[in-house]
Image (cartoon, rainbow, N blue to C red; front, side):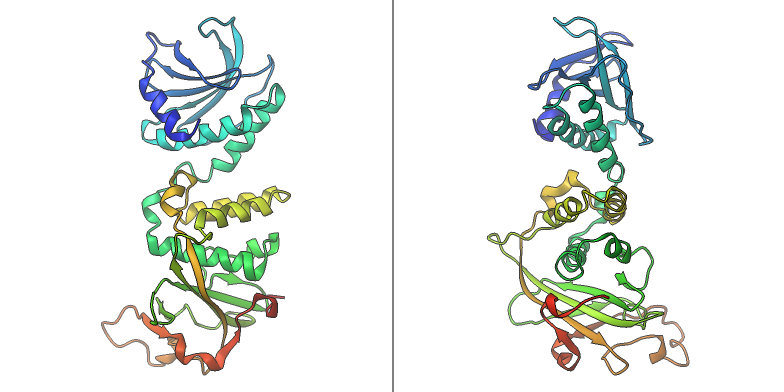
Length: 327
């Protein structure tokens, strides 16, 4: 079952008649039930062996425990009970539950609890994500940064750590010898690549090493195969053997406002038109704080400007990731 089907099923199950009881509906996989308690909270029950330990979680509004239940036509048995205690999070819980069904439904015994633990660990950074933060422009910017990570830098623990994910840092990627600011545009036609530089710090020199500007130009194309959710899945999959790094990556995309709950909204297919890397030297066309040695004029508190890369060919390093390395 998918998330929408689970959410619809919970809405149809009547609340249990008294505290401590559950109204339940059997799910297609063996030993799995959707249930609702007397307070209307949604539960997912998974049959597990006696003595199974519940996965630990500190996620607000999510309760995970092991206990005995008796469902219709079945003897009293031990179940792993995953419950949503926050009515506002039911849609997210349905997505989590669908993931649990996919991972834990086909397995039995102790493997089922381990599968649930893995799913909850993966989802903890998305549980309270405010998806309204990720506007279409923000989603395109995140797409461009992940595109650079996958195509140009390479998905390694070192490069995940170098990706600042806009956590208050000056540039999007920072290594000891190089920093990269990533910009994207979805302008169509012959407009070319024009990027908005939103502050005097964005193209300011890094503390160490050289500065590069990566420019990605895309267009929406229903026949294209490049989407933000696919890039997130690609990076997450590539980090399967590095669980700690994978967790840091998921935390970063969650902080940006991305959540798998809303992946359909972000499944916008892009065709790549141009991808260029420029070296930002002292004579590169830019504005920084050094452009105003006496300080900003009185009353001006912030400066942003549009940069036309048609004027930046002299600083073009390469259009091919093979020709560049962050090392």
